[in-house]
Length: 351
Ligand code: SAH
Ligand code: SF4
Image (cartoon, rainbow, N blue to C red; front, top):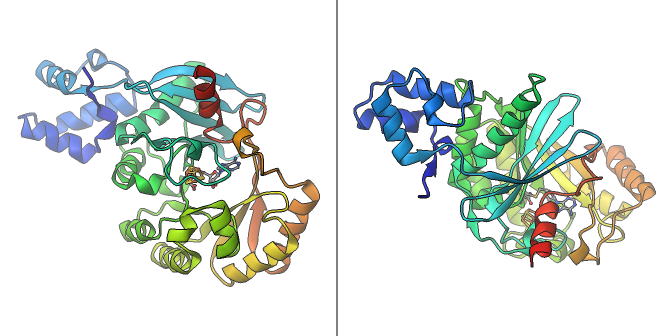
């Protein structure tokens, strides 16, 4: 039977659910503690929880809905997990080690409908959205892996940059954020969480109004409409004239700077003129530009990675124009580059 993942409920939802079935208020907190602090993987391990309550939970929910398909560990400590969902779909989750802590990159959809021309995830159309529980469980699986390693390490940061467009699975993504932020559970600070979107402007307004205090990253990748439409077809429906005001609204509402992601594609968007145009587009906005080295994707052979000289020249132009920026450090390049690539390779092999 396909039971829903218990990780998908916020503590408030779990409290209400149990109250409605005659269980007293403290019960949900107890269950929550077993799930996120003691991190059991079976209801029978929740020792002090009332038997009737456990039975009820067991009848309606599952703790484990993901199964590990493969796990690859890189020399720099990056670990890529490929998970099977209950329906057999494959998703990818990545653990990265930084000086400031451990971050996990999660997947939000099986495939992606935005279809950016450089991305491995967009090669396969979206099959379905992940439930909030399936997104939370990715973090739990990584945390359980760390628990097993036994160094006492904790996931401290989250990036929603795996397969899928998070703003196209808005409600589940927001529930996911509520759950991982909860101070009774994983307690991951909102400032340690980054959501990346291809720029669904209407959802950016909605997200800003929620005031969740998480970091927002926008996949910009080009300084003008002509070029952006060429590499990201979503720009036809949502051009810069719609996207930039949404970005301004987020900065104003959250009182935080925004991150603009810019993949450097050789001879496509990596010239000094592009950097100059980008600086002018950004102007005085509170923004940080993250320059991303492109991870080549077999099916997108029209794109190559920019050479180091061009990357540095691009960076210099931005800096000279007073733009806050940095070049992203890569993780796990020896295992399988960007998110979505391991999955797409696995699917190709299976065909
Ligand atoms: N759909 C969302 C989040 C997932 S993609 C978005 O597009 O923002 C996360 C980031 O990885 C995006 O900035 C995306 O443009 C980038 N990306 C996709 N394919 C890449 C590749 N082959 N090399 C480097 N970055 C890539
Ligand atoms: Fe989807 Fe993001 Fe990939 Fe574009 S870059 S196809 S939005 S996952």
